[in-house]
Image (cartoon, rainbow, N blue to C red):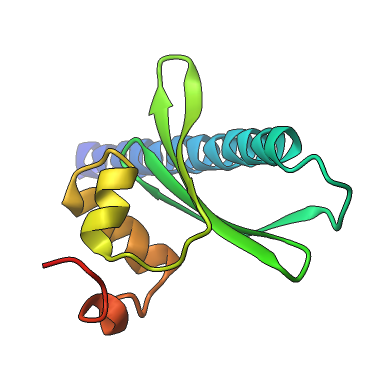
Length: 135
């Protein structure tokens, strides 16, 4: 009985430890993605205006999608891919909804990752899918 309790306790510590590592990785990814987005905005939107504000970050595998806005007139969704060198911007779109397939193609990601990101960042995206140009 004592061995069983020890095994259960060790399993609990292992699972808890893995959860803490995963949480630390998520926090680190969020911080790195935030830095990349702010650097991209600084380089591409040099005109002085309101500071950029990140409103949502979503992750799926090695992909991320970030919703951000700059002032009242500019909002965008940027997709990133985690590489050996860190997070890299793949697509920065301000054009509006083009459909899930276009989102996947522009982000150079499988549709399964695109769907997972969209579910997190735009929960109602399926309502607009029939209006898009996607077949």
